[in-house]
Length: 375
Ligand code: GLY
Image 1: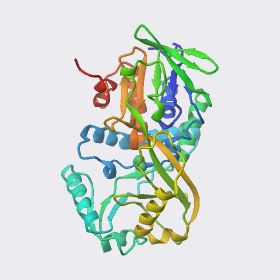
Image 2: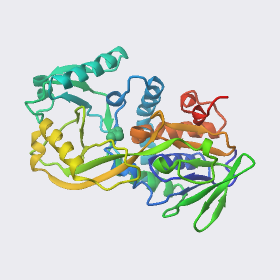
Image 3: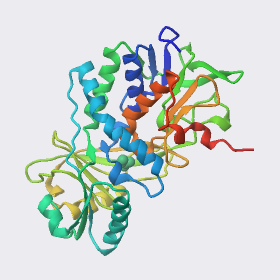
Image 4: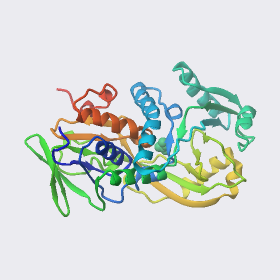
């Protein structure tokens, strides 16, 4: 592919679509993003902005862990480039994560997570409740154990998304918002464009990055559609003040608190199979807030800014789906589930490699073709 061909079409203007689109523009490609709503205002907007491979590592996910680490390492370059293209300094907040236990069951759970992470050689430290309170004085006396993960990071996700949108536009990208793709056009084993309510746009490269909606778009044969579903996550945000000077991310088995450097505090999150339902509900927040308050009592007086819910794009194996499909011209970059913010840089950099015809070892385990039934 050369930069002079028809613009690359990206279906979906979330964190993944914007990151890929902007990076492609930096490489001289022409890019159009089609977004059904407002770019950057879906799952990643609602998220808590975690860049936390060590806290979120699953027991069986070695390939994903490799990808997670590569993306964490790529973040400083990604943010430097973003600053070059926007003048905005989006800060990688590297103040670490404390995962806390509030009773004996939690401690057993935490110990198992700790042993696994220690075995993998992650930087980490086991702490008693009082050691954890020395590090983070806002923690409750109820905290009895903790694991300190100094290398996990977070970001102000809304600043990042706003900057990515600006970068995409500054580099000459075409952004079509409120523009739902109603069909991916396919003929003779090849994708050749998209249909929207207004238009038909042709292209030799279509990247499907529509998050939870990726499976819903007609046109792709059923067997080749990405197995992605929406997994609802409810999060609230509050404004921090001097009564709650949190210095790092706090997690327990069921909740997390992500204090942003600008004073915003995200508290979440549920994990619910509710289809495309995005209305926040009282019972979920009652449970989240109860546990968050048990871990950090000083949240009690903070002012609430927002209750919100987002839809994580969960794939069948909860790993992302990135790479070329069996349909010529169609690439998937979807199914990032809990790791959309974390994996944005590496997804963008590795997709560029694919488009340049270079191999990507990192992406191999995440090929869309892993879901095809073998004869
Ligand atoms: N990565 C945080 C979440 O999915 O809730």
